[in-house]
Length: 151
Length: 151
DNA sequence: CAACTTATTGAGAATAATCAGCAATAGGTG
DNA sequence: CACCTATTGCTGATTATTCTCAATAAGTTG
Image (cartoon, rainbow over all chains, first blue to last red; front, side):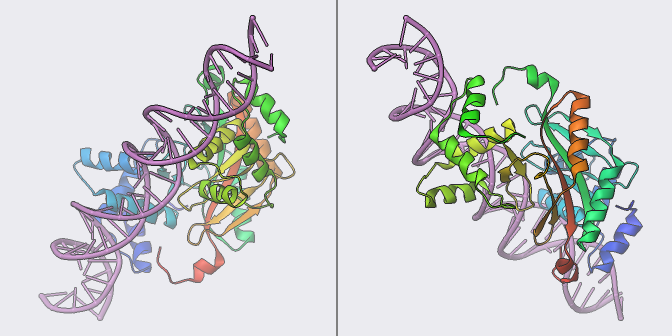
């Protein structure tokens, strides 16, 4: 959970024999400039890039998202819509979690410093190298509690 | 996060105009008798039922898993294998969380009472009806840290 | 307890997200 | 600058999950 620049991304990639490509740089940039609370799916990112005039193939998008999630740069979120969403992985004061309505998918972000501490401690105790730590709360929002729509 | 019997399951289903079927009863039973730390995918459950001599169609399995997750009976786990896993949703002393290696998918369960409290409080504060609350830690296990396999 | 309504099941087809294979391209290193 | 090989972009697979629809059966009502 570090803050990345093109240079530090390059350094970390090269260290493992990997390369910094324009595609990877642009994708990192997109995520870093995303408004707070925004998370993108592979498809969303694909469209954003196209509109920005920097089209990148879906294959590369999927590969890059996976790569960056495994590097700890991005968080992979399962927000109950049938596909993954991604957001930049930020350290302590920005780190947050999600409260999700399983019926309408409305999502509320919330913060809690204790959770990241618990996650860090747990990973450390088992000798795991921490990438991301997220509390997911599945629930039914007030509106859907009142709604008559089944399931 | 209550403990269900066939009778209480029936009561809760009927209250909403739904029905208790043999299929639903058997599926609940399977999950209740699963050894600690076991979680099943839809496919796993399908096979288990078949071997037990109580075959149930995949469609029904998917529908039932979704239904029970939305009732709060089952927890839907995203353990990084590309498909969901399910386990019975138990209250406080049995409630646990998962530390997952993103490379080999090795998963360790751990307990922490504070997290469920945080989740309950957060949901309550927003007026959400809590179904499940899980801390997911994505990390790299000791073995995979040493391994030379890329990604 | 028999008739009735409608939720549920099962089978198979359809969908959607993600991945794999491969030739062409282009980073990084010397 | 030349070389090696990681990466890209296509296109075609895969795989999990959902949908459709006719047949069945749970729960309710008289």
